[in-house]
Amino acid sequence: MSRIYNFSAGPSMLPEAVLQKAAEEMMDYNGSGMSVMEMSHRSPVYDKIIKDAEASLRKLMNIPDNYKVLFVQGGATLQFSAVPLNLMKTGKADYIVSGQFSGKAAKEAERYGKVNVIASSKDKNFTYVPVVDKASFDPEADYVHICFNNTIYGTVYNYIPDTGDVPLVADLSSCILSAPIDVSKFGVIYAGAQKNMAPAGLTVVIIREDLLGNARPECPVYMDYKIQADNESMYNTPPCYSIYAAGLVYEWLLGLGGLEAMEKMNKEKAAILYDYLDSSSLFKPTAEKEFRSLMNVCFVTGNADLDKEFCSEAAKAGFVNLKGHRSVGGMRASIYNAMPKEGVVKLVEFMKEFERTHA
Ligand SMILES: *Cc1c(COP(=O)(O)O)cnc(C)c1O
Image (cartoon, rainbow, N blue to C red; front, side, top):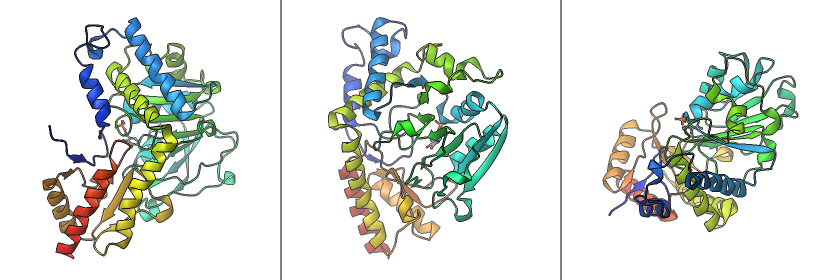
């Protein structure tokens, strides 16, 4: 077996211990004589799997009791529609656009009501996150939507916007479980699993109970948060295997000491890369310093041909998926929870050598 260092933005690496456990349990889960893939989602064995996964997530994120946890399908993209369909009661919402995904979310919400883009960082190609104070928000908006970590541009919020009584909705797809976050500051948190939690196919929604039950009449039954909550994510067949894998990842995180411990490791890993980028004469980080993501590290050489050569040489040396998003170019190293420190250390060694021979 040989595994390489995979810097994919998503689907991305999973912890090796989790893959091993899943492999051990593949043919016969816990004496059931079948794989979790083959199990009825209504069976007692599976019921314990999904309940344990939820309990572990609640413990990890310290989710208050007045929040529901939903395990649904459709990716973060379906949530771009589910959010307005469930929360646009009076028909207007504020959006902060800090990258491509928040732009897509705002555009989708326009189908259902009036969208106010109250701040955007498009003027500098999303290299920073807009800092917005309470006075900028419409106190009568149904909600405020943000994307907390901008996967494509490698930026992250360094603050939680104070929206007063207006519920704050956040897309946490690429940073959930990377560090502790105060769930009580949010009305809704959602995250696709394939960046930092599990295989693709699962989306986690964490929603404050008082926001349930306001779905618009045209809201598809599947996307109605109240129906999903009342049915404990089992209105129909949930993404069973991905939920099982997410449960293994949650247990792995708890075993490491939870999100405080994970944050410490993530800061250490990211610093290794950013410190080198700050000192390099060849590579330059693209995100403004105070908004640098711990998860997605974007950089360029300033020469598209050289970027291309770097990615191809890196791949040959066992560092794959370093090409930046097609809309930005350059490079992006996604260093989610599952990327070991060793992978970052070795990548930096490789970059130093590339710099020496190409400067
Ligand atoms: C990947 C990503 C998305 C899109 O997720 P899908 O699961 O493909 O719909 C949305 N938002 C953020 C922040 C992402 O990183």
